[in-house]
Image 1 (tube, one colour):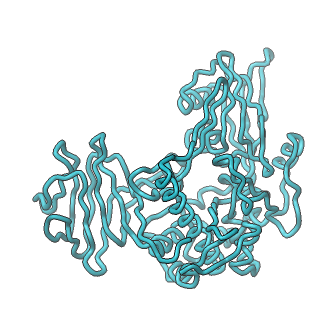
Image 2: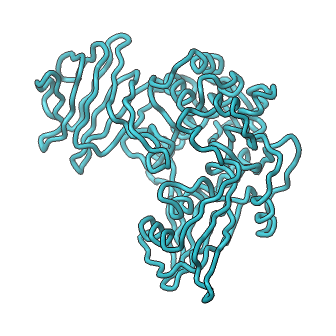
Image 3: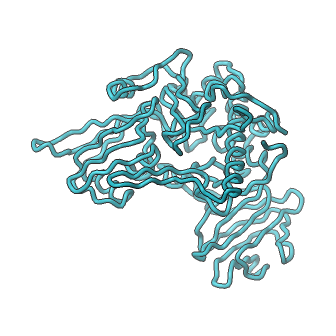
Length: 444
């Protein structure tokens, strides 16, 4: 297991023809001199051209590394956040650590930040949570995020050692099963968006609370059977949490079980009838809150735009959903006739869904791929039931997806954890609630 704090590489933005930004203080350019102030990087056939004040400050190269002198920081303009989600937008973001510019084989630029793990986490906690969130929540989230990152780094190293990447897509006649993980990145450890952990440099560190939570939990991890836990998180479970294997590879993770997100037990979903009843109900749960004060403490401003996360409805005209499906899947289903749950997890999330069309029928999985196919961005979660309005010939007119929760549902429920913190639960109690059987250990 890990014993010292590592330096990690974070992909800030990819596939750019050029970018602009600013060095705040002095940065030392590998193989060149020092630079400060505004900069521009342009992808050229000869390599990356790094310019400042209209002059080229480094010979074109496939990789340029800029190292801060002292406490210097750098800004990257127009960073896209919330990629493909309903709140996607651009921001200027400022970062600690080194800047690495890499030119890919297709000639485009990728922007990478080299940063110490604990500095990275201070940003993650600030980006994922409001700085006014309870300290108990910030500390619980720090332990969770740190554990996920270390587990990912160890898994990446193990795969390099054996030379065999994990499988993430299974296709056979009439079925496509696909899942996504950090291993989809090839030239850095993690990306800066929700695909991994939301990271926005020091742009979102607006109080001392996040830094204090990181300091209080420095080197503290969730551990199970002498292994750092692959501790996942998301916004809201909808009342029951989900199993790891229903969103990612077919491996049972003993500390990511179905947990009732309440002071009392809600039984796991076992049948389609139970799923229908559960998703159409309004059960007591930690994450079942509309308390504006709690949500403002927990959610950054752009996440507060989503208010119907516990139970929600998305309605499509049949033709609209057919268009989305064709665009997202690349498959022409013809006239869409039905959406049929084939397998659900214990939280009610569908991880195998049959899409029935007049030209073709396909079973799709896993949970996130289903959410991608059924939305222009991402459906809130895979826990949904379908109400279909049909014409006199039994052809669908509309599909109403009535759902529960926000995110994949495996591991820590952020809104549920926030409510637990407000109600007086300690950080260790919160993480042990969502990761049953795990221990909390300080490793450095």
